[in-house]
Image (cartoon, rainbow, N blue to C red; front, side, top):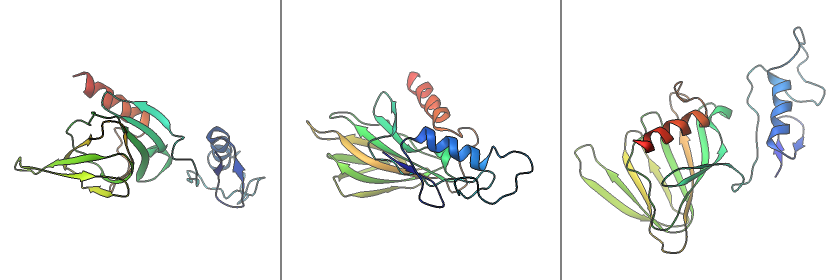
Amino acid sequence: MSFGLQGPAVLFEDARQARQVHDYACNCRPQGFDAPFDKLGLAQGKGEKIMLKTKITAGKRYQFATHINDILLPREDAECLEAFLVVINPGQYTHLHKHVENEQLYFVRSGRGKAKYQYADGRTAEFEIEPEDVVHVPRNTMHQIFCTSDTEPLTYLCIDGFPEGIPAAEPTWDSHAQEIYKAQKK
């Protein structure tokens, strides 16, 4: 896996190395250092985000009671979105829930499943999902995803968009995961 930064073609073999260079270039300049580029020719700017590349199977893994999220783009590395690969094993499903701060877009990669949603008046509807399907979940929509295969996990890329920015109460994926773990214990 390689990670790239904005500016001239500079590739790093791991995210840690790319992050160290990014932190140096964007946040840790010595006082009074006004040059527009650092020694590597990387564009600088306080708080500037960098362009990252990763493999879809190389995310940081969070194992929840109902599913797995492999984080590909953590919310703390973007302005208003995050991306992760969701894995739901055969016979498993997510809990019925809604997102107040974000909408979601799913791209189904493998497996078979079912998406169930609930209207504000309590009525429910559902549809089958399969590879190559794209599913949009608007904010405040109660929804639940099921893996309907007996043998193959359902996997889909999930992109969360935060129209009003990343929530201040859960600014990182670790803080978000802690809230999910707490909710699952109830």
